[in-house]
Image (cartoon, rainbow, N blue to C red; front, side, top):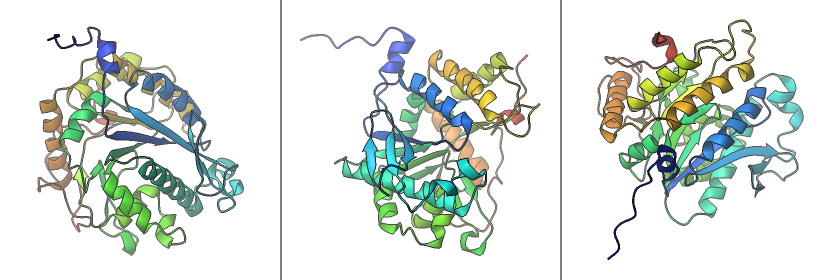
Length: 335
């Protein structure tokens, strides 16, 4: 008998061997903000280090009929047709509207339908924002701890108003894990003309998945305003600290301090790059660290009640004891 193949010797080779066959990652973007073009290029670089992770970048196209989905080899294009005219788009008007929310819901359902039609086996869908960075090695630990069906998981938020969403617990659209049976339900329950489609897409999916319990998962946010190219070593040190504690998802959403009007494109990509460098130069957190962090987030989010939790709860979130930071504003930059 031949001996088993040796494990890859270098760190980058081991990273490249990361394989999660039952996972599809969906990252949507468009021309709404310049930062998205920069982040898309960074993700192209980063994704090349995880060749076995299926990542689908999706954007809309006015050249395709509404609901038509075409893979052009770079992005998965979703048609918006005449139902969502470009003149209504945030990128053209600078005004975020309910019709913009409806566009996002439309694109999400179209892509999910495409994935369901092109796959015969159950799978997980991970919807993640373009200005996030993910350690897929640690995400593999998380998926082994989640149910293969009835899964609706991620960092949780709660709404109090208007009345239709009072007490609604939803998963942040920046980092949402769904089992494929949830996608089937969402497709069946999608009615484009229904008023709930004018909510943000992460709130919409919470409303149509009211019968799915919510599972809280970790997430770390880089929010602190920083100047372009500034604080690289500090950002990387914070990222390493969080990754070793079991984090798998870091979201970046900030602006430069001298330009509070919002030149995210000058700041966020640099922070993203430092996080990517931290991941690509570090060993992953252990499954035990990941599980402990998940338990700490559950304790801090819902006061220690067993998770998953029901879709509507009258009491506030984040009432439990917490010894973990949720964002970089709660962390001192390392000296």
